[in-house]
Length: 124
Image (cartoon, rainbow, N blue to C red; front, side, top):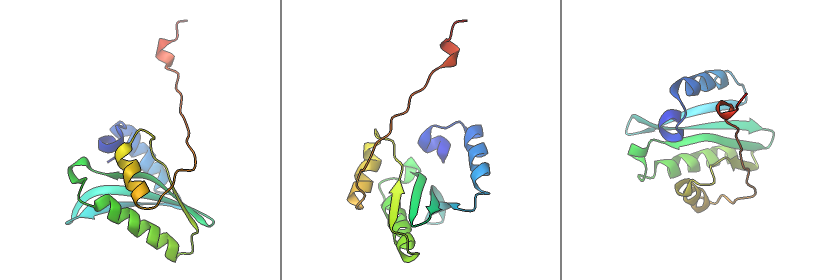
């Protein structure tokens, strides 16, 4: 799912996911639609807050309300567990996801920019 939705190389995605499966405060859930794996969502719990990472719905299944349903279920579950805040991470250029999150009641409270340096361009 990370490869399809986030353009992460398969080996890198597998290594990352194998690493976090052992984390006690993080859980990854597979989203199913009509018994077919159609997405995933990772939830990290910290005191009175939950963080959503790696939330993705396969493009073949988008537009069917799957993401909205999964997100609503996660928010309701966290609320029932006494969590006061649910945060999520999203790429600022992902307009589709931003529209979904805002329509579900999420509000932006900060942004973060990332920079990279391609060491292959370094001339020594």
